[in-house]
Amino acid sequence: MGELHHFTYGPITPIFAFAMSFLGSLLGLVSTARARAATDTRRRAWLLVLAAWAIGGTGIWVMHFMAMIGFSVVGSPLRYDVPITVASFFIAVVTVGIGLFIVGLGKPSLLKVLIGGPITGVSVAFMHYTGMAAMQINGSFDYKSNLFFASYAIAVVAATVALWFTVVVRGIPATIAAAAVMGVAVCGMHYTGMAAMHVNLTTDSLATVPGVDVNWFLAPIVLFVLVVVIALVSAVMAVPSEREQAETAAVMDKIAAGDAIRTATAGPVFGGGSNTNTTPAAPGTGQAFSARAANGIADARRQRGR
Image (cartoon, rainbow, N blue to C red; front, top):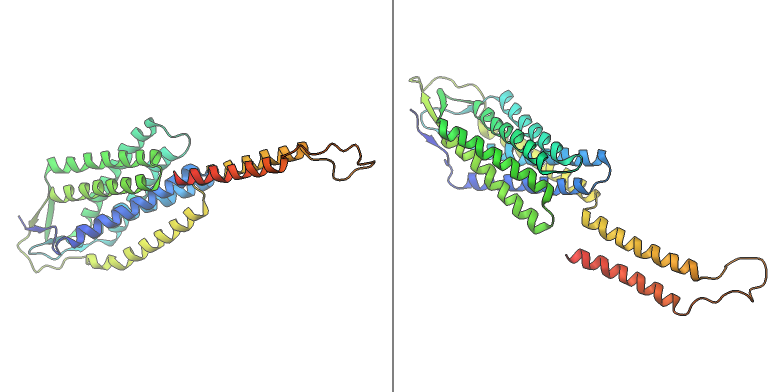
């Protein structure tokens, strides 16, 4: 049995792995919050796709390979099969997207969360082990059954909680806290699966191992994260949040009420005949309209401060 090192470079790799998981989860939660506020089905679907890229691509897949930079096997080079690695990326994005669409389209419900959570969780764990299957060494990998199944259980619970967060989380502090919980859960699933691994090396330690080094993925990972961040920030800025929509609606209602009062009390502007019979405007009408407009602005500011 070979010796495995999960933290070859010390705590720097798990710290960066958690940071990527947190960032992806945060961007995904913000995007799903805007999807909830979107009234157009096509726009909502587009925001859910971006959320799947953020959570599945950055929060899970990028986190996985940031953690794998610190993984090494004593006595054997470690390489990665590129097609299998790319396949693991699409598994993460597509399966998270399936869960988000189950929960996010139509009216959200607990039943949808309980259906989408296990589907997404099992698929995410499968993505993890697909990424592990991409590793090439002078030997073979095996897994301890108890930790193997524990990693699947963690993935199912984490995915269910994540989908629940996408439905109920509102407000900046709650979103940040939810993203932190999701980051811990994803990292916990990853390192539980890694702890389940053990390796059997061959006697030929000089044999050539096919594939590429894990550092080969660093440049694509950095580029991918930048693209996701820019795309999500642009999309989020283009779609008003639920609070912004409520504030706008409140102000428009106040303005409409003021216009109705002004129209009802104002005399004719153009007309045939004498103006001598024109009914004078009710006293205080201008002040009443100004007061209503001021109240609308005050209400909007109070809602923004919540």
